[in-house]
Amino acid sequence: MAKVLIIEDDQSIADVMTIYLEEEGYTVFCGYDGAEGKQLLQANDPDIIILDVMLPDTDGITLCGELRVDKNQIPILMVSAKKEVSDRVNALLVGADDFLCKPFSMRELAARLTALLRRSSMSSPAVEALPPKEQRQSVHMDMDRRCLYVQNRLVETTYSEFEIMKLFWLHPAKVFSREELLNKIRGIDTYVTERSVDVHITNLRKKIETDPKNPRFVKTVWGVGYKFVPEGD
Image 1: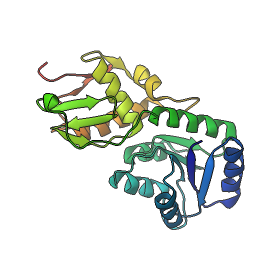
Image 2 (image 1 turned 120 degrees about the vertical axis):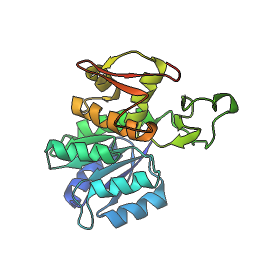
Image 3 (image 1 turned 30 degrees about the horizontal axis):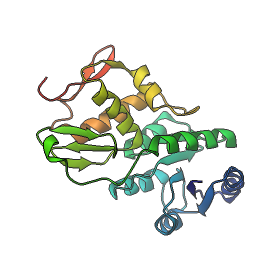
Image 4 (image 1 turned 30 degrees about the vertical axis):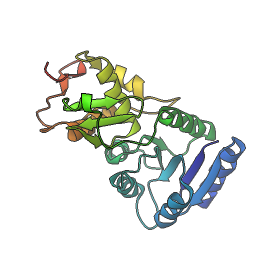
C-alpha cells in the first residue's frame, strides 16, 4: 500500500488520521512541523503528502512551494481550517494538487488520497531530452512517461496541470468549457471550483508560453473556455 507523509502540528488530528489510514492499509509517517516533515520526506520517500497550512515554524503554502521548486512532484493534499477562497487559490498556485477544509471526515480524506494516487499512478522517472523525431516541436507531451517538454526541455507540472494539458494535447483546437476541464481534474468527491481551472491554466501558460499574457498555445475562448492551438495552426 502507499506511503503517506502527514505534516500536521495538531497531534490529535494527526493521530486520528494516522489510525484511520493505517486501518485502510497505508504506511503513515507524521511530522509536527516543517523541519521534521522535510526530514521524514527525505528518509521515507512517501507516495503522497498531507500538508497543513498552519505550522509552527513555517506555513504549508510556503513549504509546498519549496518542494515544487526542488522539482518534487509527489502529490500534495493541503488541509486547513481556513476556508477563504484565497487560501485555496494560493495553495494551487504554488503547486498543491488538492485542498481540504477542516473539519473533514476520514472517509472524504481517504477518497481524496485515492483520487490523487490514481492520477499519479502512471508516473515514471522523467527523461531529460526528447526523442530526435519530436525535437522539431516547441511543445510536446510524452504520455507514457507523463512528461511535458517546451523547446526540447522538460517542464515540471503538477498532476492537475498535466491532466488538463493531456486533454488539450489529445484534442487539438477543441474548445473545452471550464466545467469540462473541472470534471477532468476532479477526483472522488474532491472540492474544486471553476476558479481552480483558471489557476491551473495560468500556471500552464507561465510554463509553456514565451509571453503568458499573449498566449500562443493555450487560448481563451471568451464566454466558453479554453483551447490548445497546436504547432503550425
